[in-house]
Length: 252
Ligand SMILES: Nc1nc2c(c(=O)[nH]1)N[C@H]1C(S)=C(S)[C@@H](COP(=O)(O)O)O[C@H]1N2
Ligand SMILES: [Mo]
Image (tube, rainbow, N blue to C red):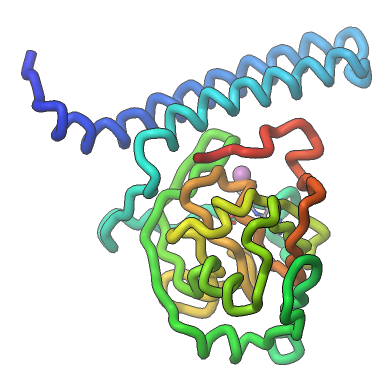
């Protein structure tokens, strides 16, 4: 057996760990599907059973996030050659129901603990300094994919509009009624961006036009697409999947 130096091991460990976790996710899903099938025989609407499934889900998410995200503060970045093609689409509905948002009349609304709550047009957002990242998106449903997103560093944007960065949460409201929220440390993380592009092109509708929050240190469901409004608050805002029992933190 070849013994690698610790530094080399740390570098290659991440990909292996993700594959291991994905395998576990897959097994876990078949298990919970099996459990659901068994439950159907009794009473699938039984509140206790449903609650224990969501509790198990939350605990399992804690383990997943520790395995995937805890190795460094920065998420790994990849090369163009690593990009997954085609990049998967996912939402709580089918692709034919992706919301249509008119970019010309779009205004990003700001509220809560923010000094300057004037709405933003897409042109104004594009006029800010842009950066891109090639990172891995990890979905709790057991898949992951590498993609390239470009846009505005979210922390720069929050500071520009005078957000209270000592507040606890930033919440998001989306055109498809999806919603989510993140802790302020994640909002200010250097790799958290307001993504306006995918693969150097205007963000396509299925990936979240006119904008999504790209957070490579968080699971996929904490990357809201089609964001229409955001707010800064100290009151826990929850989220679409979070309120169904998914672990709120889901990342690092
Ligand atoms: N507005 C909105 N954002 C969303 C979702 C959604 O249903 N609506 N699904 C989440 C989930 S679970 C995943 S995995 C990713 C999928 O993003 P993609 O379509 O770019 O792969 O979007 C996340 N953000
Ligand atoms: Mo997801």
